[in-house]
Amino acid sequence: MIQYAMKELKYNAPAPVGNMVEVDITAQFTAPDGKSISVKGFYDGDDTYIVRFYPEQQGTYTYEVSGIINDSGSLVCEVGNDNGLHGIVRADGTHFRYGDGTWFYPFGTTVYALVHQEKELIDQTMSTLKDAPFNKIRMCVFPKDYDFNKNEPPYYPYEKDDKGKWDYSKPSFEYYHHLESVIEKLMKLGIQCDLILFHPYDRWGFAHMSKEEIDMYIDYITRRLSAFPNIWWSLANEFDIMSYSFEDWERIAKNVHAGDPYSHLLSNHNCIEFWDFENEHTTHVCLQIKKVDDINHTIEKYKKPVMVDECCYEGTIQYEWGNISGKEMMNRFWKCVILGGYCTHGETFLCDDDILWWSKGGVLKGESMPRITFLKEIIDGIQGPLIYCGDEFTKEKYDALRNNPETCENDFWSAVARAPWERAKEAMNGAKDYCGHYRDDAYLRYFERRTPAIGTFNLPKEGNYNVEIIDAWNMTRNIALKGVNGNVKVDLPGKEWMAIYAYKV
Image (cartoon, rainbow, N blue to C red; front, side, top):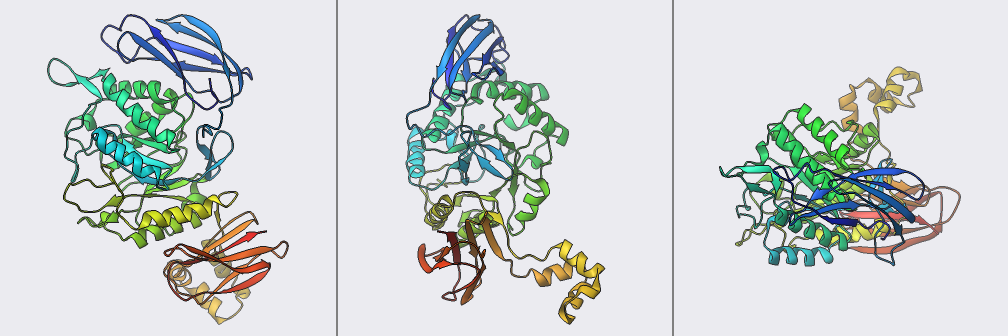
């Protein structure tokens, strides 16, 4: 077997009677370092049982299978030959890394109902993704009923009983084979699948499962999919407008975590009320927000990676969340990255065929995609993730002035100290300083809609840096200074969407 690639053990045995979810088959794998992991198998129809395993170490694994099947053996795990696999993405501080230690910078997009489209449209979407910058995609397990998305899916996740109701003890193997084929296609493109387990936009009844039905669903999907290296678990899209209680969601998070022996990334997406990101099973922050300017404070609060997974969509539909410009989508990506977080794209352009990227996929029509590609190329060229370092007027600075008025340097700072905090913050932070750095190797400052004719860096006095002028919209990079350090000034053209980038040489 290949390191970081899913391995299957397949067995033939009589089909389970009744419940096809909670089957008795478990494998114990012992890694080369002596650590063991227990993995539940699943029934896949046609008298076939499967145990899926994800190997992270090179060397010889041993295994023992028990339950309806009894088997044992060993498997040698070898490094892949340039297969592009780096392992499962997990949180590392406030950023992400693959299993092999490579940094992962998510540049996301959204195609909610991708798996519920016909083959031709899915193939077209994959072709589009092949040439796009996106390395993470949000998509749903269950079909979606919403504007611009009224088609019946080709497959449903469950069979129906003799009364015409969904039987959650009988998964549709045809559907799951189809879902897995989409996940595998994404994996071959190097794309993480942020799989949304629940959502409220439903006309089939999947949004109203009982506790027992939810538990069976989570048990089965974690048995089937946990060994895929490119899976992220998103508990829901807009969890807070579904009928389940906060306690229900905490139980779901606990069960997903317990059912996944490989500890994939896990979070929950909001409409109004944010999820409890301090939840012990939650690995990163997932936000639906329109204003991304302060996510550095969110990062500082939770000490976890922050994904702005919905910041509105580039498009022309009637809803305010679906008609921002390409420039504004690009702008929000730049802000998120500079502040130390990550952003997700989507497109909602009105069209005669009702094939909107955000829901069904197809082709990309907007202006932001090539600009996001340009930004990703810059970030990929930095040897590590950015951390916000802008000159921001914080509550700590304010309190220090207010509590020690004798330290105020002049009448201006005395006036700041006398003002109420909210007014002082508004006055001092009217134009945020979007500046991020990676150690002392790279500094990136973004001016967004401001139009300065001069840009400045206070670089370290040790070392030599080249400084580039970047036009984020026109996608140009030009070296302005070479071999400089300390306080530097750069002449700028006095227009929007400019940035300056200093890197050690």
